[in-house]
Amino acid sequence: MTGSYPATRLRRPRATAWSRALYRETVLTPADLIWPLFVTEGKGVEEPVGSLPGVSRWSLDGIAARAKEAVTLGIPCLALFPNTPVSLRSDQGDEALNPDNLMCRAVKAIRDACGNDIGILTDVALDPYTSHGQDGLLDLEGYVVNDDTVAVLVDQALNQAQAGADIIAPSDMMDGRVKAIRMALEMAGHPNVQIMSYAAKYASAFYGPFRDAVGSGGLLKGDKKSYQMDPANAEEALREVALDLAEGADGVMIKPGLPYLDIVRRVKERFEVPVFAYQVSGEYAMLEAAAAAGAGERDALVLETLMAFKRAGCAGVLTYHAPLAARLLDG
Ligand code: PBG
Image 1 (cartoon, helix red, strand yellow):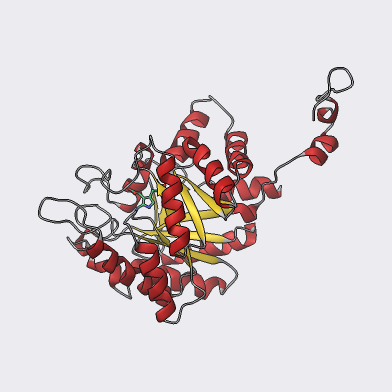
Image 2 (tube, protein in one colour; image 1 turned 120 degrees about the vertical axis):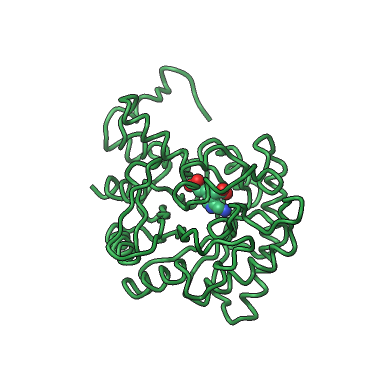
């Protein structure tokens, strides 16, 4: 209920810092952040990703060091993405099922370095492993087939769980994969391995730098519109979320982030479940470009956008700015 001026002056509580702190409706802490990391082969390797200034691919030793840094910063979870050597990419993406692949070795390196002090989220989809850069298996016309892909994704998820992943995050947008993965995890003795589904993932122009980072960009022909969602659709996102929850998702993710905060809000209000958002590579690159061009101040831009995710209803945010934000929030 709002009265009228001058009895009501909304500026009154804004006058001092202590009062603004007292009246603040939303809090952002390092515990709200999930830090995506790119993994590469080698030892002592740090490869800067050209289209993501400030982000690098790290070899396993570097990944372990980043994990320790995350623990120190209070970041509760890492998300891993491998840059699979080109020689190991194939039509069917078989390397995804190799128990000794880069992803599995990264999971183990983090566990060795940090024990259970940090959560490890692993992405389930075939694009870092296929020679064509699509997330699934192709038929003769080049269409990404659903059910055969799901069967492979189940094996990929089990492979990651076996390596020690805490959260399986299917980003492939196949129908029915959450249920298939949940059942397989239960049967294989992984009842506490979580599923965070990329429930509403849009066919977006904001993924470009990520595809550079995992090395699938140059390989990809065409687009992903036959499985990722049409940016024009919101009701469909609610149906995607409803299905993934019914199939056993512990949390649901909306992706990309800022352009889709309306979806975050509607999902939160409708389902009252943990909602996460991915502030994706193109969003990170835009903020960095704005800061570099002097169009805004980096630290303030980063914290404002992350607060917006919390205000919209997110339980947490995947962001490449996680270490910067955690440092700013600490200081
Ligand atoms: C792959 C995947 C993508 C991202 C996360 N997992 C790219 C895509 O679907 O092409 C994008 C993340 C980002 O842009 O930061 N399934």
